[in-house]
Length: 347
Image (cartoon, rainbow, N blue to C red):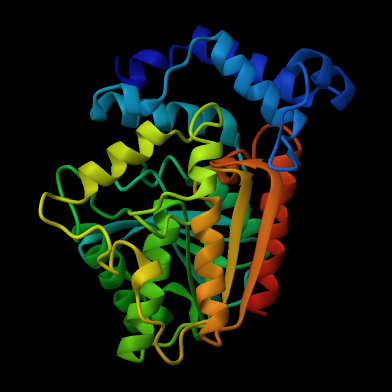
């Protein structure tokens, strides 16, 4: 079933209305509907997210990883539209980034030239596009006052590793060369992304330092940093919190062709040598996320190498909270905090 078939007016209005109404209820009412508090590893899951996950189970929504990849992509986009809402932005336009599609978000009253974040979307290197992350990019740009340029890199299995890595690095080189044409200050450029996009931002930052390209900041939102990981968080949160072990296994198997070393530093930045001049980083993790521990291990690796790094764990959040800016309270607040850090870093 295609997205166009799923997005019938009646179904969309019903699902969006139910989600919006449920996520807007007072916390005490949400608690009664969500059930007993979920506490793991000394952390309590946010009530609104617990209720959202329960509604997904009641609706018998299946994970994208259980569907053929084309249908999984449609499912990811459909759910992103439901949870992202309509976010205001000063201006937005599609533009080519060399050979790649891109989308530029310009916040209201943005200075020219001004800071720019080059953003790489998540989705396990096999899902996601400009539309799946349109709402959080709008929100991030408008809240931070920083231009955001989203990159539509190639996906596996059609284009496996190192295609995504090559595309993101090529996109950043293009931005450095064409900064003026998009209103960007070359001294205030950043890279960022969520999940797989966080991995791609980390590896792009490393390459930028190695090549001597200007880069002021890296924003890594629950990045996947290790395709060999067997961490405690991968075990604790393998099921029931949106991102599953099956999804991660599919992502690695699809992205990395047979014969590719999973510890290749272009795919697993935890194994990379930290170059001199690497940009300062803000690393975000979620308490109920299988990728939590490897993201925090990467932050420690940077700190041990003398890189300026801030680590923030949103203890009550799940993987994917970055996309939940149109409903509920806790995820939107967390993304608002991320936007404030981006603003401060590039001020």
